[in-house]
Length: 81
Image 1 (cartoon, rainbow, N blue to C red):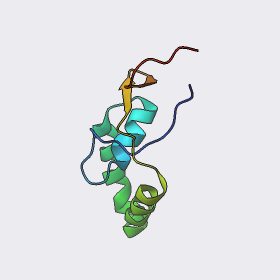
Image 2 (image 1 turned 90 degrees about the vertical axis):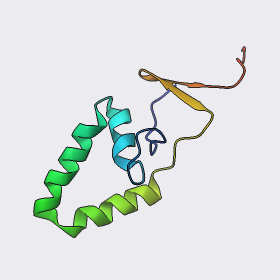
Image 3 (image 1 turned 45 degrees about the horizontal axis):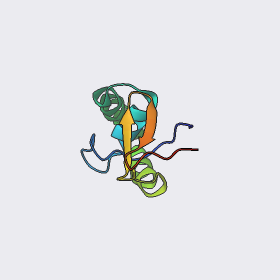
Image 4 (image 1 turned 30 degrees about the horizontal axis):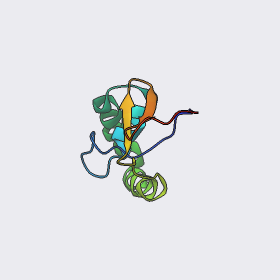
């Protein structure tokens, strides 16, 4: 199964965009948030607008999906092929 970018449900401070990017890249969400804050200085409100546009475009992580390391597996009953 391929990796998909979602807004995070568990690593959420405002809308889960930075947490979702961190989960997608498999890094600590604090690093993504710090990069976001440092980029606010030169780009002012442009980055804030991009954040809210990203929150609108990136779908929220479905409730029935569990993330384990790099893999995404459904949390429902096992399906055999």
